[in-house]
Length: 375
Image (cartoon, rainbow, N blue to C red):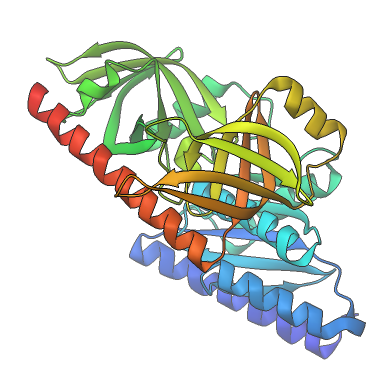
């Protein structure tokens, strides 16, 4: 039998969630629920307080609700499913980096206007249980119309969603700088999408082989191959739509590509591990390109979870070079690219910010010149 405290807490949690459901329906806004497990050690209450305090700041002081069996709910107001997934990915890595622990299992779902308290919580519990049972992936997520982990036809899932809502956001990259616009998917049949674009930005797509689509009810960014660009009709035709676990669109910070090659060195305890070239830079992460052989040695020596040092030099507005040295942890490895989460000190971060602003301004000048030439 639950004790009095557990009963009161259950009523409070249900009331808060139901209040958010009512508000979202009347105000036509959105929210996501996330659930994670963490075995609380009451012998170390100070550590638990620090952890919850940290999580609260990372989720912009949204609601945290305690649940039975050492589980917790995060109520993320005004979040779409894709943004919630990105937030939980970042939160998981931030906790691992700061506290040297791993959050057990994560499930996420998006509120739908047809949801009741029971249907919403049941769907979230389904994803959380899937996460607990899985030996490979920690975060399971989905919506009323889209279950990322079901073996269903991708085209059938997209057809169902796009019939309800054909609005989406289209992204392209200009030297690492995202160019986006709101679009309508006019037609989707047999894996081919026709997109109407009332913008001069369509000229950028003529130079690209693929583009990215984000839909508020689809957890993953979609990558699509561009098979036709019609500037006269402002029409894009796409096929080979695929769901991505991570994409350039996920990057919350402004990220730029170097104008010229920047050499980088990755070290551990002051000993060089490998040499590489910087592919792109933000204030919180750096992507580097390295040789496959060097990456294999990195994996063989089990550096995936170890804190390392990254060193490289960036130009200033006066054409001098500034040395950047920062702590770094591997976020992901894709083919010959290593993505590193970095923790620069205040001085290093200010230098990175200055370089990113300098590079961004240069890209915007180039972009304006290009637009004058085509409009």
